[in-house]
Image (cartoon, rainbow over all chains, first blue to last red):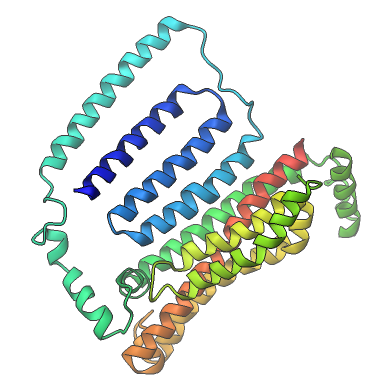
Length: 210
Length: 141
């Protein structure tokens, strides 16, 4: 009973934060509130006994994402631009709310077909999950089943995930580092010069910019 | 923020404990919640805190972009390397039991190594993202 009440409170908090995010136009407030949104989701995951997911959500969603958004925000003005034409804005709002209600109704309709929460006869509990739960502690001697599924039974998927993270990092580095290099005007002229010269040039320029 | 003593002292005190907690999460993943992804993010957070308080120049001196790029690839190589080693030991790709021959120790060693690879890659990618975004701002302002 208390678990359901905590869940309801947290879900209401999520809706409240989402509405607040929609209503404010200050970008820094939006970023901080989306961090709060992630933290509230993490609390919901803890209440569902999904501690590993909650841990990831708190560390990635509430922690690192907020910092990265703040770093990216310094490219942008502090306030969101509000469109002046109020007539077109209201017609867009009407279309958006119709789409939202329709998509929400479809999701609720689909959710009615799902097995009840925690149902032991749900298809997801009958396929390979019993084998993982039985083997992990006794055969592999690893009590945390999440880790065994992630790293051992589904090791190939996690290899793919790691490569995805690596590729994403490379992509951002290529985009941003490429942009900084082309902006330096004298970098192309000194291709025959030793590398140290252009580095010193870059440093002094950065020093001036501060 | 560089000249504010509160930030400087807090960052200096927090830096090592955050990394220690990250390592705990990394190597305790078999027995409790945690693992490579979470630990990588936590360890990266320590370096990001250092970069935020002491400036990006100091952060880049601590972990240079070139080293970071190598470390990023190293994590994926550790992960794939475990798979290749198990292949040479006569098992399937990423079949940790083949690493030592017994299920108990092989799975433990394999999972710890694989999680280490994940943690190393995630740490350096997060740090690279932060340095790229913050450096882009600093170079263009």
